[in-house]
Length: 208
Image 1 (cartoon, rainbow, N blue to C red):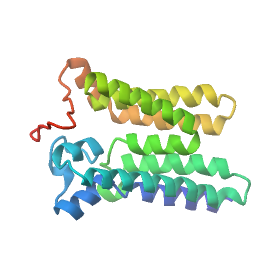
Image 2: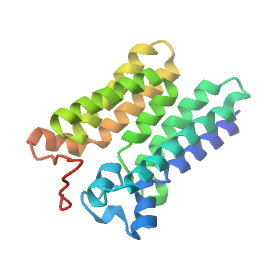
Image 3: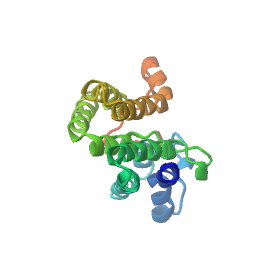
């Protein structure tokens, strides 16, 4: 079983290295999204830099890799009676691979889309609440980062409350949420200082 866990973890982590923003910016624009805007390999920076239909391709890559990592790990550990634990393992490791990709110099995205997809796999109810919190916060403030942080906080609180006593699922959900919050620490600082940039879905400022 030890080898199965190691293979599942490594596979999920490497799938996380497949960064949607980096891949699609290279394929569609022959460019590297990290050379623009904030320099982050995330969905928001991709949208600000390129926009258009290709943003949906970025979303597809990051969501599909998360699904593949979680269910792949679940399948690998199912024969040991640990399917649910495998899902959690895959979800956590793909998030780490996305945020800290060894193949990209450990400079990845901020993990919101991966975290949401992971939550959707582990408990769709919590994921829907996360989405609602994000949409409401963004609609009111136009800060993607604020919606993301509040959604991530909802993830941690939700899994902590719903799965109290189911330590593996609870710990996995809390970790994924806290990891996303940690990755947004610079955004949180700018929000506090009032210098964070807003995102407008129609009229975008490409110089941001």
